[in-house]
Image 1 (cartoon, rainbow, N blue to C red):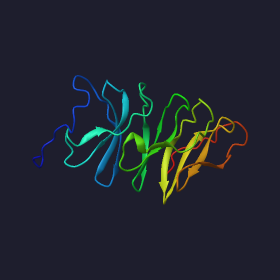
Image 2: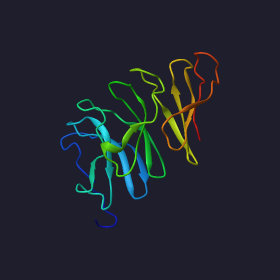
Image 3: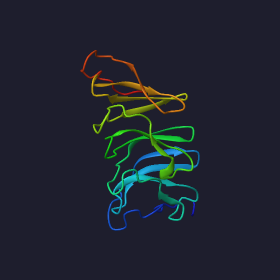
Image 4: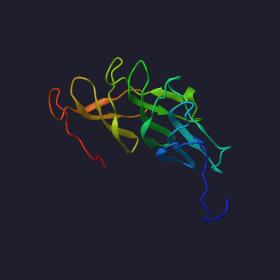
Length: 171
């Protein structure tokens, strides 16, 4: 690497656009989603020296279908993200060190069954993660998960009943 130069970290999709998104730093590691054509849109990780030998797919949640992870947020060494899985829809998931598919888990099945809660707007506050999701009963409302991150609770039904709470721009 020559200071002041720019070069691709990895040619994930050699003849096309890998469309890397959701760049998220955890220590000296970089997490992002990208499409390699073989597995579709999946989570990737790059570590120093940030080249093709230190960049790899971190997980494949629902082979042979892409999980299409998005909206990454880190707390400590845990990366939270939204992703699909055939039997539980798009739900809140996490990956922990050493960042392989063995260490990927669903935080909670917020919209029970195969429907999706579509968690979005993730925001870390201390050791808690706040996010907006739909549990199938209350519409899009504010949820929180805290250590050990194995469940999530609705903070408040802001718009009582099935209407959305119209929550926007968590900061």
